[in-house]
Amino acid sequence: MEGWLERLLVALSGITLILVVAYIVLVQDDHTMQAEVNQRQQFINQSIQLGRVDEALIKALAANAGKDDKLRELLARNGISINATTGAPEREAAPPPAPAPAGAAR
Image 1 (cartoon, rainbow, N blue to C red):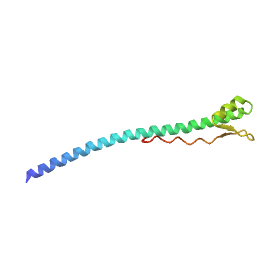
Image 2: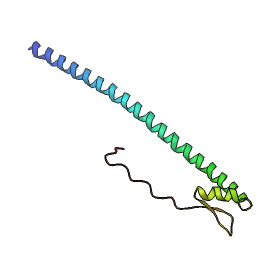
Image 3: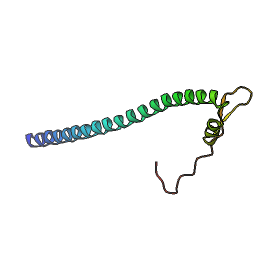
Image 4: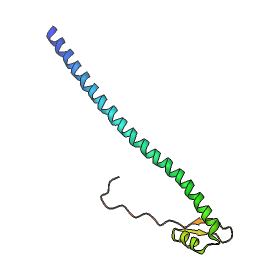
């Protein structure tokens, strides 16, 4: 009777060891994935901040573009037109993004 109990305990110990190893692997994978998500979030936050700076620069340039033909031309080449009545910059509609190549994975 003690033989089957000993085998049962060894089997349960082995299963426990396998579960602990699986848990360690999953935790490491989770940390790696969390670091990647944090990097992406930081990029998004920085892009938002830079977008605000970009808008402020465009407004400052547009305020002076009424007097400077070269500056107005530079803004026009980059898709920004100046409203004749208000002098405020207006972005032209961006062209649609190019389709992804066939078989490209995200």
